[in-house]
Image 1 (cartoon, rainbow, N blue to C red):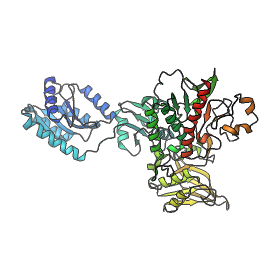
Image 2: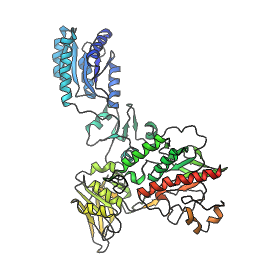
Image 3: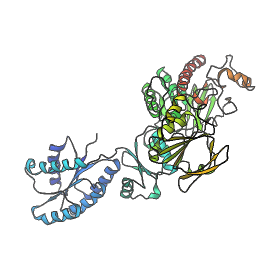
Image 4: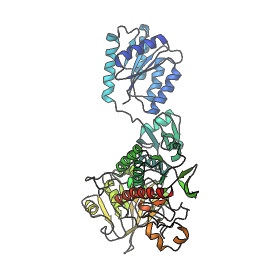
Length: 554
């Protein structure tokens, strides 16, 4: 834990050195003692400390300084740390200045030089002031801060990216949080610069893209010097993470590439209750964190956010083509999962990220406190999101086209929803239009049977209307079904083009695609079960087939 700071300034170097020596001898174990003899340097340091999230508990300032007197310095220091205690160092003849300081900067104490012996004239005073400060002190968040508008698509994208990559951050809504406004003011930034991210080193990024953020926070390190990987896994959902764990644990040079954030759709789930070994359930974020830690410990390398543009075969091995580099590998496992299908209803696109979200979007749940929230979809993901949002929202309405949830949702979730008083089902209903100004404000609903139209106030809408495979980028001779899912194993033989493409003497392995050495696992694969447990099993199984393939091409 970082220690709070006692900040000293005196233009007389000898006095400053003596003051810091005495303070360090008594307070070094509980406070960090910083000092300077230059006012500009002091003010620059305070800005840097504030941006880093450091805490100043007490200022000790000399009154007679040529650049700026002590009262003037304390006035400036209060802009950074208004709660810090303030002590003025004065000569015996400066009592008038001390009285002035009490009136202008609410001075807590004036200390007459010299203060010998410090055991009588310095330490008791400072100890009393620090005890008072501790009573009211609320520790500042130490880490990344994101300042923006709550209903800004750009702000939502940054929050969602940080949360998805398990990076702790503090969200400061510029319209409700004075701390955000203060940071902008101190750094001469305007609201037009938003969103702004303040990093742990005190620097900041203005309206950055996620690739820029990733580079700054170390999410996309340089690859180790592998001329050739044994296996590259594309997609870090449950299947990809499982493949990463098993690949590295079995001695393969393993690289895992993710275009956005690890965990996939499962990573955004508020509660997974049917995963073996967790009787009380666990969140998707927790499952992702554990898997990422396990994979990294075993030696899996990780690149994110990086989008794979294509897979190319050359001289018996594969090239994975990224935006800015090529990666050589002997085999590939595709675990890119699925994307949420877009709702094409009028107005939905206008407010996506500003009250309308695809998937669970847990980063926005707190903003739903005491609000009217709608969920579209009748699957387990929709049910889990509704249960989680019900903890914050005044009401949660589940919109479905069918009569009830029995054919699309697990029984345990249906029972939980029925037992939750502020969750309401709207059957045989669909959205006709979304309305609002700068954010979602109303939804127009229509009953499918009666055609009755109703307009309701709506603060947030979460959409779960099915998924489509993320395979548009694949240009290699990989056979997909009519919906775009990757075909594997024996099912490939039912396609007329298979014989033209497959030139091996053996049949494809169970999870192997129509390109030898390229495997598919998880939700992206045709016939997959769309469950976390089955995805983990397929990701693990894919590595066993990778071993078989590598053995035959050596």
